[in-house]
Length: 122
Image (cartoon, rainbow, N blue to C red):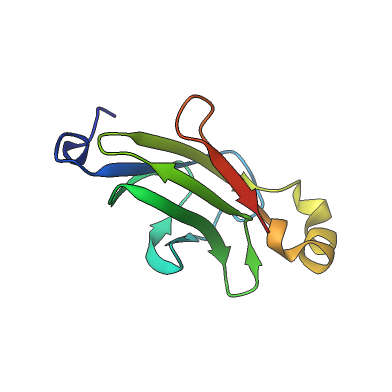
């Protein structure tokens, strides 16, 4: 996937890649929220680009209304692409424990290693 057109228009891009190969949640979509607003849904193996204005943004994934990822907060600049990956947290056998004890960690969201600085919040 090349650089999006937005990277040349003075906007930033949040690229989200959902990993394939996990039984848990394999038939379900993760809903993407940027700055608390619905931005789209992503399925296993899919990569999506979200165009954002330069500045600070929060990214969170949800499954239904209760089970979520932690919130990733990042500062993105014009022309910058921040790449994230997501997947279920843990194997299917631990799902009940994760859903009951750590509902805000049900989805793993990993931020960019060499891109903008990212802070993970609950």
